[in-house]
Amino acid sequence: MHIPEFSPQLGTAEIAEVIETLEDNWVTEGKKTQQLEELLAQYFGCKHVIMVPNGTLALFAALKVLGVGAGDEVIVPDFTFFGTASAVVLSGARPVLVDVDEFDGTISVAAAEASLSENTKAIIPVHIYGQSCDMLSVMRFAREHGLYVIEDAAQGFGVDFGDKHVGTFGNIGCISFFADKTLTTGEGGALIVSDDETARQCRYFKNQGRPARGSFIHNHMGYNFRITDMQAAIGLAQFKRIGETIKRKQSLRAAFYELLDGCPGVRMPLDNGFGNVVPFRVNILVEKPEALSRFLAERGIATRRFFYPLHLQPALTARNSAVRRTPIQSVRLFEAGLMLPSGLDLTEDQIDYICACIHEYQASSQADHSSEPPIGRNVSF
Image (cartoon, rainbow, N blue to C red; front, top):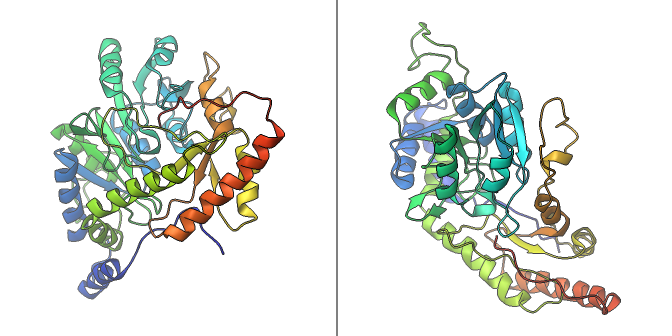
């Protein structure tokens, strides 16, 4: 038996949409991309959605469009995917890495406040693992200090803060449609924008400095950040069942939580209460995640560790990033966190098997440490 960590759910609907694109003989960015952008804008509740090749390039484009570059600093949470920081470095700016909240793994506004400098120009809150940051506090902080807000909502499809979709609070929101996201186009991402002028600049930027193809007059500097209608076709098919997909992800987590409730030494992250949560993965926290991961792998179960703290990343040296207060919570989360298989096609038998293996390992592990105090349940994500 092999249970993958994740596998996208693709079927006849996606195949039909792609075939229609091929039969139309239009494979570059065109009408299907425009259709998907319009549907997503309605779904997110924003004026503009602008498709780009992936989530990291969405962040890079947002930074460049807002004029963030050499000499500027951007506040970035230490607990996030590497692309959040690499986009800042590649823009010419410097990421300032700050700690996260121990309860839900989202950016700590207090840590951000302590890391401000005269060069701080923007903040990138990350809606980590399908749960919103405290955007009320983030936006208040940004207004007080005159900062741009670029929301990293790569894992935030379907996620709300209050009654608004994440990605719609700041100057620009960025989302990913990679294979393991709630909606996938294979590779892909988007800029979420409500300001007309900002959206216009985003379109110039993604289309080599011109408002549309077909012209060889370039009014601005820009890149080729277009996608293909074949990708958009997959996204259109995925969008038609997005409600079903979100419910499935939530029910999967509920099934795991029910079976792991009371398992010795296992903490199941809870919701922080800011709004709708769409789990990116089924996450647990244990004392020895690496050992548990190896144990599960021997039984055909693929898992993945939590994100490695950015301030420990070999590529983020003191030359291109800054740490003004050493993050602690991001390290604690990494040292305890494990992502379980979360594919939408998991069967009840597979979930039962995974949880039985976890119970087996934890019972053995706890027997070896019976004199140690139990781990508390005090995290939300």
